[in-house]
Length: 170
Image (cartoon, rainbow, N blue to C red; front, side, top):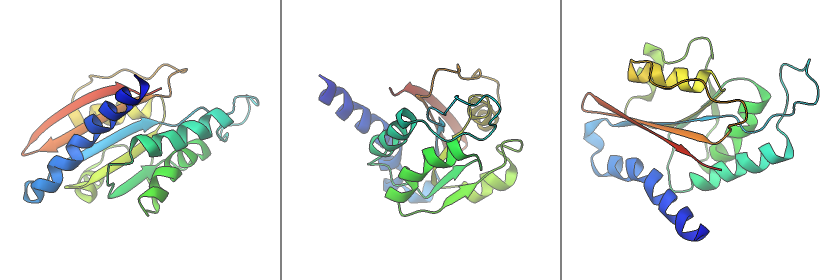
């Protein structure tokens, strides 16, 4: 049962990638947005913690979930927990991490730089849904609960239409 679910999940999240390859001229842009994996909370004063072992496992799992998605770019904030979450997927795609400012999310420059591409964006419990909302041009998604590190937001822009979906991968 778990293998069937995993196979269906991989097929489901790969559909935007496959559809883009068939019609490159359409300039379809697909964003996959996730929150960083589990961070070390042992030192409450540490504003830039690393991932826990469970977080490192999740970061590697994300790269497996995305194994059939050919990313053109992987973006992260410059925090340890986000870069450590993004790195396994970037490495599997032979990409260097690109960085964005979590205080300046979906800007005109970002939209131009990523137009027609398949992009992974790794952020935080508040910035990830805010980023999605900015792409959608509406406040649709609330902040992610603090104990939830498994949301996957997929936003596709094609021919002026924007669609989104949210999956939870645990």
